[in-house]
Every structure is written in structure tokens, then in C-alpha cells.
Image 1 (cartoon, one colour):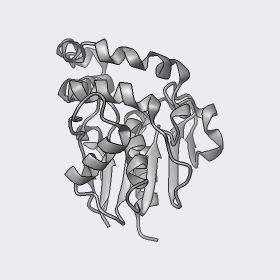
Image 2 (image 1 turned 90 degrees about the vertical axis):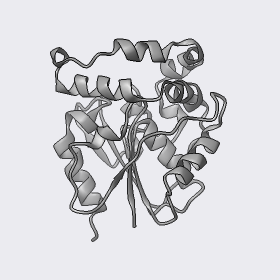
Image 3 (image 1 turned 180 degrees about the vertical axis):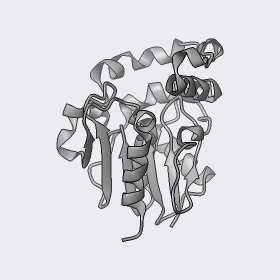
Length: 210
């Protein structure tokens, strides 16, 4: 069994740099899409092939990474699917973010990345986020903003576990509260960074052999 960790949009495999597990894991980074019009389904299939994700593997995805992990599970028999600050339907994304997604085609993400200088004045968490944003593929960020709202989602997975902050502004908790297995009180969208020890412990509990 291989365990793959997928970051969120604007993130890289460095999201999990301070996570520690008593078993092997693979921290993955996103690949560039063929075009801004590549479908979510086609991207997920290419991503799985590129990273050699195979039947019986375990996927842990944060935010957009959770959506891609979920899409992969529709095409490969994934053993266990764990979502952090994510959702299983595009309706779980805040409506305002879905409404403005078409503007991503015109946003100069590469220019914004040059301006996002990670200084210690922002604190370690924000500096970490800015550094990941600078290292991300700007074409992927634009693609993700455009395609995420059109994602068809997933109705069911036999072994799904969701970790979610109750004050997440990107995937509002109340839009899917009934299916959250481990709510994080007052947690925002970046609980994977802000509450790393807690999330790390939960993942170990969920992924360790019973």
C-alpha cells in the first residue's frame, strides 16, 4: 500500500515538510495541465499516471488536492480517501469563489508570484504559504481556478474520511457538515498548517494498520 499526500492550490509537496509518519509516504506536487481547458477528469488521470498511483493506494488531499484525489478515486480503486479542508462536490466550494472563477483566465499569476516575497514579518505560516505560492506553476493555478467549479464530484466512496475546520471560508463547513468525520472547532482553511500536530496525529491514527 502506498500513501500519497496531495497539497492544495498554490501549494507544493513542501506543505507536508513538517509532518512525520511511522511509515513511508509520498508527498506529491502538481503537474502542469496540457491547457487551461483540460477537464478535471483528464487532469486527474494524467496526474495519477505521472505519479504512478495504482489500485489499492491511499490518497490524502488538502483542498484542491482533495478534489483531485477524489476524482482519481472515480477511475482507480483507491483503498482509502482522506480529505483535509476539501469537499466531494463543487457545491461545497463557496458560491462567491465559483462565481469569480472565470476571471482566473486573465489574472497574471506569474507576476503575482514575483511580488509574493516570503518575509519573516508575515510570520512562519504565511511565509511558508508565500514560498509555496512562488514555487507553484502559474498555469496550474489558473487552470485549477477555472476548472474546479465545473467539477462533477463524487457521490460515494467506501472508505472516505474528512477532516474540516468549522470556520473554513473556502469550503464552508455548513455546506457539508453532515459528512465531516472529524470537525476542527474554529479551524480555518489552512488547518493543515495551523494545526499540524493535530492533523498529523489524526492522519497517523487513520492510516496505521489496525
